[in-house]
Image 1: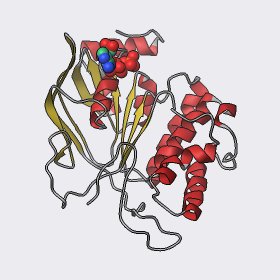
Image 2: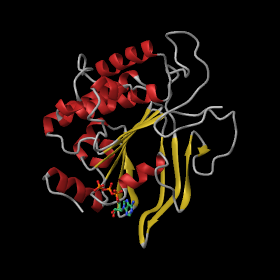
Image 3: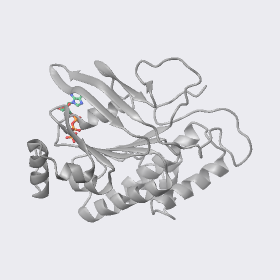
Image 4: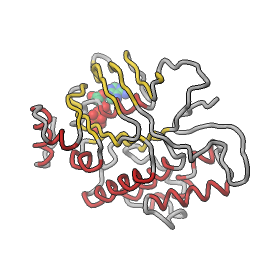
Length: 276
Ligand SMILES: Nc1ncnc2c1ncn2[C@@H]1O[C@H](COP(=O)(O)OP(=O)(O)OP(=O)(O)O)[C@@H](O)[C@H]1O
C-alpha cells in the first residue's frame, strides 16, 4: 500500500481541506539493525563486516576520521548505495531484499546533506514545502501551515520569503532541517551537519537538534568527525576506523574508552588536530 520514495512519501485520499493524504502526525522512531555489511569500491574494502544496532528514538552518532566510510554507511541506510553483502533491517524488515508484504508498516525518512542541498532560486518557504508540493502530500493551505510550523521549530520564523542565497551557512543548515521535518520523518539522518560552521553556529545547531528531540519521537542518525558535537547531542556513539566499527557506547563510555584508536581520536580532536 505505502511505497517508500527517496526523500518522499505517498499515501491515499484527501479527507478534507486541512488534512494530508498521509497521517503526518503518525510519527514514530524506527530501529535499525545493520548486519555484516560489506562494500567495495574497486579494490578498496570501504565497509568491513559492519554490525550495528540503533534503537528506536535514539540520537546516534557515527564518528571517526576522514575517509573511514561513515558517509558511505549512512548512504546505505537510505539506499543511496547497495552493499556487496550484508543487510540492513528497519523495524526487523530487510531494506535490500525486501519482502513484498502489504502488512509491513512503511516509514518516512529524510536526510540533511552536508551541503544543505537547498535550491538557491527558491525562497526559504518554497524549499521547506518542496517535497510536500511535489508529491502532492497536502492541500496548499495545510502546506503553508506546515512551512510556518517547521521554520519556527528551527528558530527561523518570518524568514519564509527570503532567498536562500541571502542566508548564512548556519541558517541554510536550519532551513535544510526544517525541510526534512516537513514530512515528520520517522528517521532523520545528518551527514556532517557541522561542516563549515563556526563554533558558535555549531553550538546553536546542536541545541536546535536537542530541542527538536524533545517534541519528536524519530530516530536520529548523525555522521560527523566533530567529537564534541557528538558527545553533546548523542544518546550513543559508534566510532569507525578503517571501514570497521571499533567502539560503541554512551558519550561517557566513549570518553573513558581504553581502545587506543578511540583514545587517539579524542586526544587529537581535543587538541584540534585532524585524526587519521
Ligand atoms: N562513490 C564512490 N566511489 C569510489 N570511492 C568512494 C565513493 N564514495 C566514497 N568512496 C571512498 O570510500 C571511502 C570512505 O568515504 P566516506 O565518504 O564514507 O568517508 P567519511 O568517513 O565519511 O569521511 P569524510 O567525512 O571525509 O567524507 C573514501 O576512501 C572514499 O574516497
